[in-house]
Length: 301
Image 1 (tube, rainbow, N blue to C red):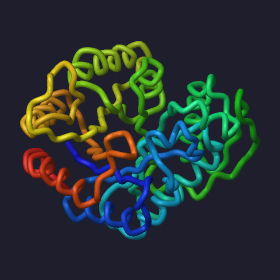
Image 2: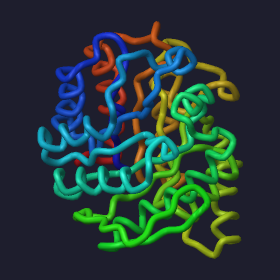
Image 3: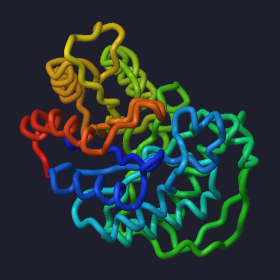
Image 4: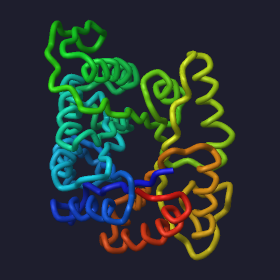
């Protein structure tokens, strides 16, 4: 397994210095990748979880590409319906070139209806839009010119270069059946968040394999994002999310993920609401505690 760090690109106190510190910490500590989240319209609904200011993932990753050398850089996750797919494809390809072939594109549909409204995008069709846009993005990475005539976007004979150095791996977020199908049809990896180990073992991964069999496609890699929470006392196994509990419980989760075939694990120190934001040094100490076991047991870069 390779391990990564979720860069917090939002909230009071966030700025160029903190963003760069996250990336350099990940690279210097031996993590394999660092990822960054996405919101465009920070409505009151969004701000309940992700407070402004919110740094754009593409411009931030383009900058960090020139300030790092080894780690892969990615999005966790880009909300595909928020941008024209030709824009997403070109921005991603540019960053892949700037970084020397180190981009991972995590994609998803997101959850905020008010953000969709603010951007003039149909919330009810977000899954269908995402599927069509993914098709455009991945074709634009492989061909110098493409045309497309779909339900949501149409164009003819558009030059798409420069193409990426490496076609970026696509990680598909979400845990619904539609998300799993999207991961099988369009993704290189399934990238779920906020789930229990039992769900991964008994529901998520078996469903992913069934859908792959139905579609006669390869099973995508398994690359979960873990919301880290370290507690002094054990949490109830049936209630806690993977990555939360005592150090022993978190270590057990990592061992379990390895047994389930996870190729990548992204560590997320954010607790889901602005009041839970801590000084960056505290997040680094939490990561250090987990990294000592993760990188020592399963290898770093």
